[in-house]
Length: 288
Image 1 (spheres, rainbow, N blue to C red):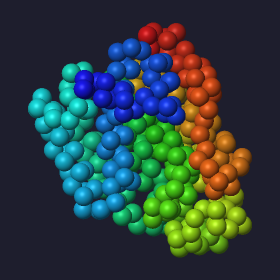
Image 2 (image 1 turned 135 degrees about the vertical axis):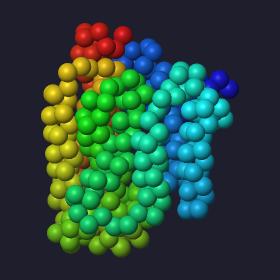
Image 3 (image 1 turned 90 degrees about the horizontal axis):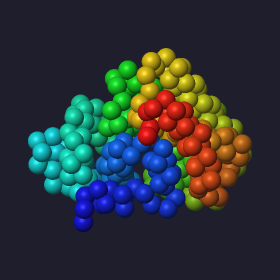
Image 4 (image 1 turned 120 degrees about the vertical axis):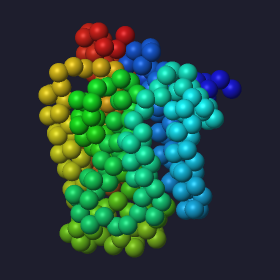
């Protein structure tokens, strides 16, 4: 199979916001975005999809070796071969390695003490991934702080949305101080299906996490306002942030809904939000 088609089949699937949002960053940038998104999806899913911790660590180590082969123009995987064809070899090695190291921490994550620890985790995983995406789309180093702040906030929103699913896999992202504040039993979360979780205190606990995400988005807004130039990488992160904010509002309004189903932003809203944000960059000559 053609490497680029492999990437398209990997990420442009029904239900994926990228299926619609990649249309608003420009044709050349869209191809790069598809490739880097496929890379992040393939590697980022390893801690969640591989049950054996030793196998998961081996797979992450293989990807670090593949990055070295990729940067030496000797890529073996279809994703890195597609990236090689698009001349993306300058992906920052230290940032990529730091991200993979953070992913290794997801294999057997320790409890998070408080919101500050949670946000550091979100920056190491979600913030770093967002920066890698933007860098692949030629974002300048001056955009790093914005991308990391926005990516951290977006990742936290997804953690909140997926609290029940992650608990079922033995991961609890609800900080210990929030658990204590609202008398939520961590063991009950990890051992019982979400339908059996006591609703008492749940709404308040989720809204506390939502406030952390809102604060992170406010920080990202300040970074965005200070940027002198805009590019396709920033456009992509800006669009993704708009979608995550919509999801955040849904979660804050009805926190207990995540005990019943996985909440998502509709395709219609995704298309509208991508157009609303993307047109600013088109009019500035960035995304064509």
